[in-house]
Amino acid sequence: MNVVVILDSDFLSAFLKIEQMPLIRALYQVENVAVPPAVYREIALTSLLTHLTDLDWIQVIAPSTNQVEKLTTDESFRALGAGEQEAIALAIERAPAVLLGNDNQARRVASRLGVDVVNIPAFLLACKQANLVDRQTLFTVINDLRAKDFFGFRQTDLDLLLG
Image (cartoon, rainbow, N blue to C red; front, side, top):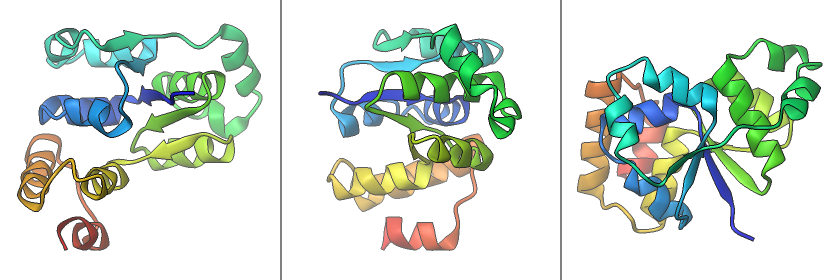
């Protein structure tokens, strides 16, 4: 069974800004990537919407209302934003799934709920290990993330990625 790849707003926004969305499909070897409606709405409020709508392989998929309602009994889940809530609910519903997201609180909640969550440094490391990117490409991606998304990398992550 193929894994369903689901994007949260922060990850999606970052990869749209640096124009590296194809890496997601390449790493997970999927034809389509899922985005919950709340995440789509968040991106729609930005100038990135045109970049998103150009990608015909992005599917907007809503989790069931029952799944979201069931999860709202969890206090830490309720504290998350709508996009994060829908992304986690969709990942649970569509298992096996992987959620790509960077918000630390959302990642902790998702992990506790049994969702496989991958942040940007882990994603880039997986791309490196799969030989999808070389050191120079990684260097460019890291610099683009810093410049265009103000993404900060820990030194230990940089050492793993560029070492």
